[in-house]
Amino acid sequence: MIALRIDRIVRLGAGLRMGPFELMDLIGIDVNFAVAKSFWEQSFGEPRWRPTPIHERMVASGRLGRKTGRGFYGYEQEAPHRPRDPDVDLDRPIFDEDDAERTAGPKAPQVLTRLGATIANEACFALGERVASADDINTAMRLGYNWPIGPLEWGERLGWSRALGVLEELRELQGEAYRPAPVLREFAS
Image (cartoon, rainbow, N blue to C red; front, side, top):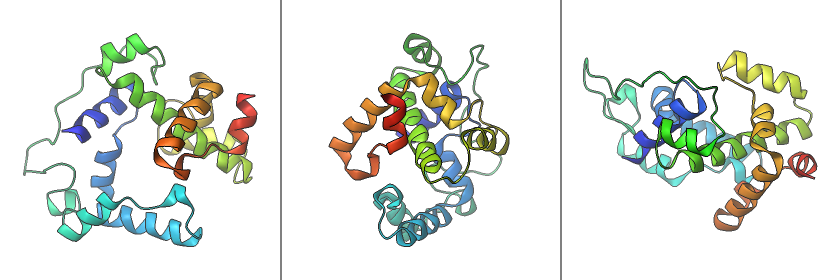
């Protein structure tokens, strides 16, 4: 199951407490879909905020996450939805491709690079829109979400040029939702 593999990569390779699919199941897929739809509508169709069709299909089918016992995962009473993760002795996120692959699996380098580029990009949009300072953005994610490093720190460690290249490639494949923020382009130059 792809959700299980991605979530494992994010936990082991990025050092986040939950992967994105686990988090959506915890929040409620219907809640996640409603928030995404609201952001998208309030931003007049900003491609970054467009809700995904899979969320809409899951909500329509009643697969809302933990509260209904089925979302991206199944939740049986008294049974964990995932195996226990091993301890990792590396600083995370893991930026070395060999370490990432050994720790979190063969697709870990690609997933972690893509994740880091998109997280850093969104932080760059916030920085450019003066939502908060760089220090405040990093601190909010470290303290508020218990991330090992902030999103702008992630971009720095990943490398701004590398992040820009990933985003440009994704933009060509997937569209404007992946357009690089002007601030990220500045950092990469």
